[in-house]
Length: 322
Ligand code: ASN
Ligand code: ZN
Image (cartoon, rainbow, N blue to C red; front, side, top):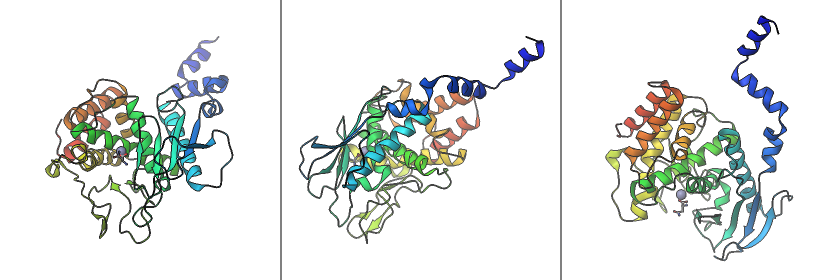
């Protein structure tokens, strides 16, 4: 080899080298990634018995029931997000089958992660439509699953609000990724499309403006705070986990929008790494979590990098100084 050739080879950028390696190695191809995706959707047929009857599994054609297909597609969108953005194979990083149940209960007004599967109610039809109508809701429940396999934040008080917030953040990121939206273009609403006609609201929570997602005679007004000044002390809802999540939710919004581009590229990466490095105690409080995100941003992007500064000032914006 001539000196010129050796020099040219060493100048190949990392990403070019990676591209060469990917094209030579079919083990890294998108087709291989898709081959690791496994989904199973069951139907509880309005009972509260889980898992219900298996109605569509991986590779099968769409069925007549739109709820089944929306859950199936939502699991696929979440899987693609984790694979493409974080290089993670499913919730556990080892290709875990994504299982869900639709038509849970009679007019059931909620969706949840039960520790091993996503469960979706049909809604009562007056306030809520089916909970499969919103990709951010589907991905929220999967976000609880992802957290269980990374740092299983205890579901009470501040760590519980961080658990809820992480699920919301996964919810909106998956929706933004699927729609190809930048942080500036996105609605930042969790649960767009699940309110019945006539309900005054855009969804169940807003990361951009917690406390403003809805204001309706049947539902009341969105009670979420967006700052520590409004922190709610209550014994209900496991210590206000769905209320105080507004505070870390808004911090993520501030970090993602100040950095610009796609939410998952930098802010999302930092939040994901914060729970993936296994340095947080399960009962971590807001300040401890905030400190970890600042530390992760520094480790990923450098001391006093724009990313570290954006994350620190986002937390300051919600009243948390680290
Ligand atoms: N939809 C709620 C959630 O996933 C259900 C619950 O509170 N368990 O947070
Ligand atoms: Zn939740």
